[in-house]
Amino acid sequence: MLGWGTRKQRAECKLIVDIRSASVGAALVVYGEAAPSYVYGTRVPIDAAASKDAAAITPAMLAALAQVGQKVVAEGLPRLAVSTGAPRVTEAVIAFAAPWYTALVHDISVKKEKPFILTRHAWKQLLEEKLTTVAKQPTGYSNLEHDITRVMVNGYELKDPFHKKVQEMLIALYTSFVSEQTKTAVAEAVQKHFHGVPCTYKTMPLISFTTLRDMFWNVDRFTFFDVGGLVTEVGVVEGGTITHIMSVPYGSQHMLQAVQAACSMDDATLTSAMSMLAKNELHPSCTEALATARTAAEQAWVTAIRTQLDVEGITLPPRVFVQVAPSLQPIFGALFGAPQHRKTLFGSDQEIQVAVLTQDHVRKYIDIPKDTLIDPFMLLTALFLRTSR
Image (cartoon, rainbow, N blue to C red; front, side):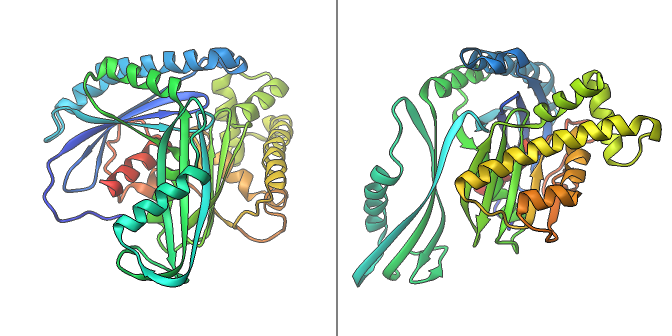
């Protein structure tokens, strides 16, 4: 559960770098004794032409990252200078979304004929032994995370399993990897603007799961959709732990491009018109063609998700959280409200509870100035860092 401790802490600023399939974002967040303060945020698109060329996508991402670094220095640091008690950036946290990482979830089962006392030394030995088999590091990749999301001892979940008598134990493990070349290039690009600032690395599924679990602490079974420009990530949480992660190479840009081709609209007009259509604010004379194109694009997205769910044998819990860019939030709210899409995704006509995450969900946990870019992806990372401090 999210909350603030009473221990006195010196204010510090963290740079969040969010690397996604179609854009790169950055935020400056100040942490101290009270709720975090989201000082500055910006986002730069990755060159769309590069997304069609595997050899060009990484240089294009690094070019966008360089632009983001320049904007943070020129616009963000002056704001930070007037923030109370945070004179400089102390850490850069780089969050990778799909397709930049590889992640796996594992259940590690331990059964002994005779009970034993679990010491920290025995725990360390056990994990080292299991990690060499279930989470072997691919060649050319660097490990980012080995995170224990749940420990069951003799059938009971324990936050602290040490010095307990153990006969059966089930450990839920999340592990992630990123290309060593990509990791090194990103670190060099960040430290070009923030020399000497240490970098740590995270992935969005673990950030989303951990933060949503803490925000909605009484919900232990849910689905989260992280809708990027070119990739949609789907995570399934059962029994309070993440059990499945799935990446589908179909995102919001594919939907918008399909509608744009059908209706001959420029980018700005299209997003605005689709949002107004989702909220029933569009004039009837403009509705029919756009509605037809939008329905077809939504169905293509839903079908892509359903196809991958069938391949991997995944069933989605009916409590749903959606992370998507602010301009697209009304569109995806309407999508999940459509009975035909719900039936395709969830396999029945059952009612589902959907929350498209907005700033209203997090305002009680973080201070956001009115003139700051609201970015749901970086807001989740900011809250994740607060709970992990």
